[in-house]
Image (cartoon, rainbow, N blue to C red):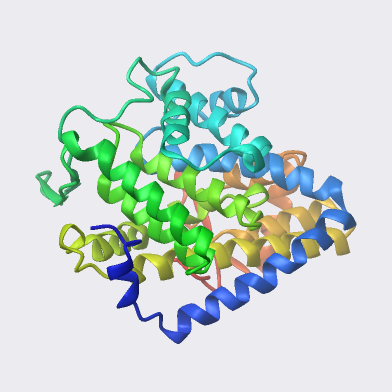
Length: 354
């Protein structure tokens, strides 16, 4: 039983804290056009950085990694993928670009979900774009190395029917305007993940589809700030809230609100970061020092010099080291660890730093 049935929605009570989050996101949305007109060159720099970070983080959440230089070259389409991980990264890049460029023209239907999954997997093998043929499970690895099942999705033989029903319900609720889009989108994402319609790529597809729906409802922050990076930096909360909200899903006894609150919190964090970065850079006329300071302020978890370099692609490592030294002396950041694994941490932790 999905979260978009009339029976489920009829008994739903949305707490005031979530209503407040929706109101704040509406205020952020209203400022977007102003930023677009003020300094398009700043937005283009943020867009390029977000594209790389989104591709890297969303794949890394699933354990798919690549060398930093190779990843950047793949995202910029300068090299062909050389192994399975790079192939999956290239597929994510392509779908992300499609959503960025054509979101307004993409109908939100199950056939489109299949097409996007085909593109996601096209470099990695020939099983993309088809519903799962065998049962899959959502598992976790315990400290001792053993695994346990966290959730059992719907069976393969009913997957197509469930996806058709989900999209029909989504369209009906959206058309009737019975639910705010900022509730409709996370509800859909939870149901998609509970169905788990593909053998591989479900988590990446869920994040891509969320981005597509946010775009289609006017929330464009994902173009300039990587939502995937924020999710990665609060990954434990991401998995925990999905687990909480999936319990009882098959019987329609689940609580979609823990996941919804996390989803909206991620979006608010992205807007706060976007406006902070835009304001700092524009007030400082885009100086390299301002760019570094702004990048550091945007990190939620511990960060490395390499991560600052990715956020400030036009700034030298020597300059980054110099500014980080200044921030350390000012008590804004503190060092964590030594040697090659050394990182930095904001002295005042932000939302999501668990």
